[in-house]
Length: 179
Image (cartoon, rainbow, N blue to C red):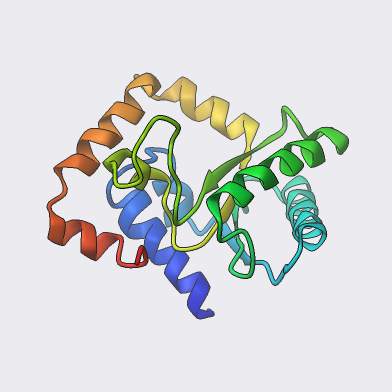
């Protein structure tokens, strides 16, 4: 496993699953149904091609084998504004290939910042990752997870509370990739 994938899997295990930021992530991670693809793309066209191939892979492989894919983008989109702009192209790709309603793409970035927050606000940590990531999710799995969860509306507030409760040492340890 290459170093970038190891970093992402460590982030997934310690932050996403470890802090229970996504209550739906633990099972597919434990069962080995999370694919990490490291994109070599250096421009938007190449990254869109990678995205298309990974969505096609999800189309072809049953969710019992492959639930979700994380595409890491180490060579581009380091600027959060550029990353956000690229998400419009992602939506266009989903629409053009009639994947809207079948798949959705969640966004994670080292400099993620929710609208109306300051960069250092704890809630931004919930979407901060070691590299820009495109998280490909099966819409049917998201819907099933939402139906099975007792109160999905509380997840963001619980995450903010949990992240605010971390002390400085815990933050440095868990988010050491945020330099």
